[in-house]
Length: 174
Ligand SMILES: [Zn+2]
Image (cartoon, rainbow, N blue to C red; front, side, top):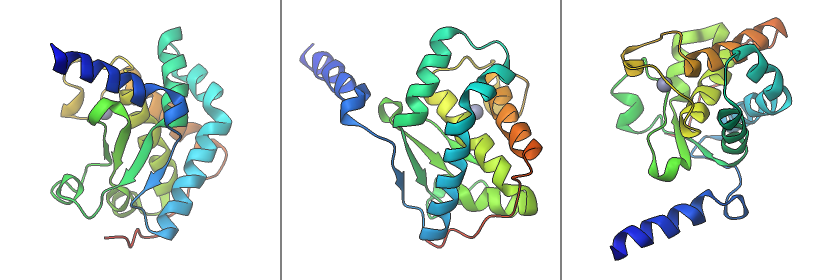
């Protein structure tokens, strides 16, 4: 019982925005600057991305904006979570949904000259998971057309429409 109460208290602490503001962690300086560019694009266009996704519920929209502003984005290219799966762009499972893992160099290698808009796709996709945006059963088996994937596609499409796509520089912090 005490453990439950402690967990509940901790989750309140960690989910209160006063205790958290977005950080980019473990990215080398080039990668960090690219991550900032992609997050700035998402911040500046979040309402359009949400509208283009189509059917997000009001609660999902609110939580998504909150998570995008407050979670930590971690470049984990040096860890097994990214190394063992070359097609992994990111992963959201994390304590209290306070951070997401980004496999920055996997995205860079797979997408080459089109990497930047896919990075934006992955960042908002993982933020969507952290925000509890509804996903279809079997989501982890690969791309489908559920809300989380469509959120990422909406970001990538808008990014390409604005001619922002480009290659991204290597994350050397591994
Ligand atoms: Zn996913």
